[in-house]
Length: 191
Picture (cartoon, rainbow, N blue to C red):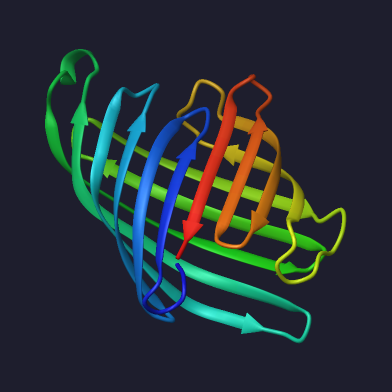
């Protein structure tokens, strides 16, 4: 979610999935976008429309917190075994909450996905981070973070990913590697 009239383009890749999302913010509390995902272990893709709602924002003198509701509806396509070339209606719903000041960051999000007979799953993720320095407006901002992911049905249900986040201007880039040696790379552009 960006500012009203703003567009965000997000590319997200980790040990579970590759995804892309384009989002347009209509109001300070509501955005709509299109998404495409591919879940590698489950061998299925999903695409559709995503809705994001900022349920609450807390602006404090030195920090900010947000509570979002997220949902999406679309179609899933499977490449796996008995479901090869099958399409099913699909959707997801979840929430995200974060808090940050100029030095510390913490977040939690979850999601339940239903893709007909192809798959259904629950996942959740939490992050903590610290900025090694506090930059001024327009500077390159750096965060060192640790992300813990939990997907109960996965072969490795809990993974831990140390990562680094860089933010400058309209670009946010994240990179890391989890405890299974799988890479994380995310890139967001807001304009």
